[in-house]
Length: 367
Ligand code: F6P
Image 1 (cartoon, protein in one colour):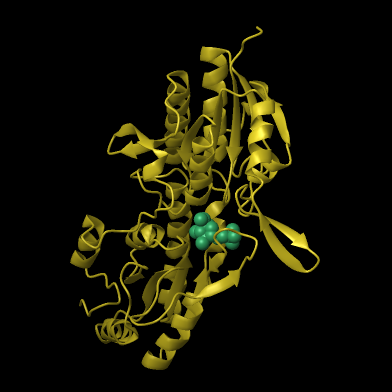
Image 2: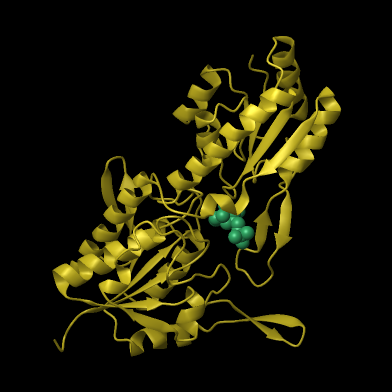
């Protein structure tokens, strides 16, 4: 019993459906197949810096498969290499990575399992280079992590956004309105593209294709002329007009990635109403997309990724992330992931498919 291997699990960045399913998969397999001891770091890198953790037993991770959020808590701000400290009214940034590393060493862990998005995984890569054995699991509703075709949480977010679009459809039809649904995704348009196609959006606006308000207005007017007296616009929060800028909702100074997007749908709504004379309303799906229980797809994906992570721990494949490559699970060097964003390639088959069924991307007139 003395030499039981020990792992610490941390969840960082924005939460999403399926994190608990990964924690459960990692902990159950590590306990059942390797008799490891599991520690959960609380509140992301905050907990690591402040040495806050708790033991996780088999019972602790039973019954959490379907639960949304993360039982460990998370932080979108704490970064041990650039930790924000308030000095009077001013913010100062300090490198407290030595404290974080010392806390992990005190725990005598054999592996640090990091479940996170691009920011969290970038920090995990730095910790790996500072001597911590790391295995990572990619997590985000945005699906924008390099080195993996898909992230858990994405399908759940797309499902919520699609349900929103479906509901908007009926009220748009009744009132002969233009309805805009703004979805998350940060600087990538994956959620907008998938939910836009699934929900039958007439116009899909993504950060990867800059839109032209005249083209959008023309599409809406043409639909009206043909008797389709409503239009559904699905817009990614990171979409921007040709020659224009993204809309920033707020700046979170203490965060390493301080820009929070949101609100472009309202600006576009006013422009469409002015250009077409048709009543336009905007709905922001917001954090609804991050909340609640994961879809069946995400539960399966999270379980596969979590168990694969333990296989990697057992064979000492550190400094790597579990990635999805087609139908296979891959071991992707963190180096290839850190500091990068996976946006939608302009030749993506789904963009072609959407255009083929008459969907506009706001760049040219399609009908
Ligand atoms: O990365 C996940 C995400 O939900 C993005 O889609 C969105 O831009 C951002 O986080 C929202 O951040 P916050 O929770 O800080 O408002």
